[in-house]
Image (cartoon, rainbow, N blue to C red):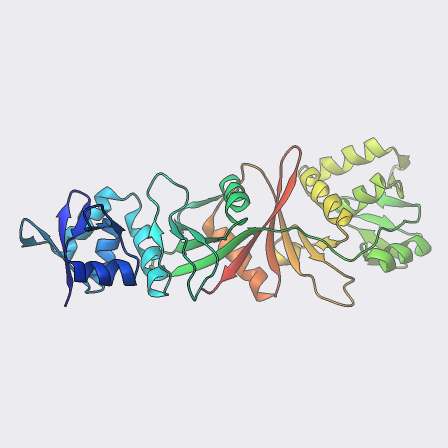
Amino acid sequence: MDATGELVGSSVVVHTPRDIGRLYDKSRFGRRTKTGDLVLNLLEAVFLSDEGKLRVYAKRTEVTFTDLVKKAAVAIPEFETIFLAYKDLRKRGYAVNWVGSDSPITFTQMRPTSLLSDPLSACAFSERDLLDIDQTRALSRSITKQGKLWYVLVDEEGDTTYYDIAPVDLHGEIPPQSYPKTTGLLLKDRLLIFDPDAASQLLDKEFFGKPFGAGLQLSLVEALYLVSCKALRIATPDCDQISEKESERAIVALQPDIEHRLRVYRDLKARGLLVKTGFKFGADFRVYTTIPDKAHAEFLIHVVPEGFTSVWAEISRAVRLAHTVNKEFIFAVTSKKTIEYIRLGRLRP
């Protein structure tokens, strides 16, 4: 027999002890009052009504499912997105509770279950929403110390996609290297090294660049990194050698956004990682923890500044591509003083 509840304002109150036992004690719906009643929010009431487990009355007249949905849609901002995410989580066996509209977190499940032993916080988004990297960074810092942080994306057909969000401390096995000193010719999109000995050492030690005849072609990030290591002097077609500052200005003029990527490149190298361009994977870098002969790149790094936002369609494409090629999608978030790495992993709960 269906449980029954009374619509009181923006809540549904269940009075019958048997119904309270089924809904609260068994399935963790609602909250108990001092008088022993069970109070359901409208999200819970709509879900239970949709499942055929609750009949709602107002002044002894049954409230139709349509009218209950209308009331919930008025009371709960972004109701349809929140409800579809809630319904999917509940149907999968997660006894989540709606936090309320004043929190960046949409749902929590604090009690361990057979599905998940850690506390869970989940944020529901429509595919039309924006990913806010500052909010994501703040949530990942605070929540993942004690539990899990999931993002639940609801598309316009009502299907859900899950992402596991967590800060990550990247480290590799590449030991510090010394580099041969050489000179390279700066062109528009790359730098050419014609010295075969230097080219061979750079390629063999840390897989810098790609062969160019007997020499080597470097990306501009690689070139600036080697300039900062005092291993590379730069020449141009009309000048035998330019200074380090002139080299930086010339390369920044060619790629104005290179400074953010260079900071991350240096940091990744300092962490013992091998870094190559990630262009063919739609990323800034692909990153190896060991030499490429022994393993494929494990990570795709997307460099973004603090304050970055993006439509979820772009994020979905990037994460799916990373997943397809067996790599992890990582945001490198740059601020004036720090670089933080945040993983967005596709999840099948």
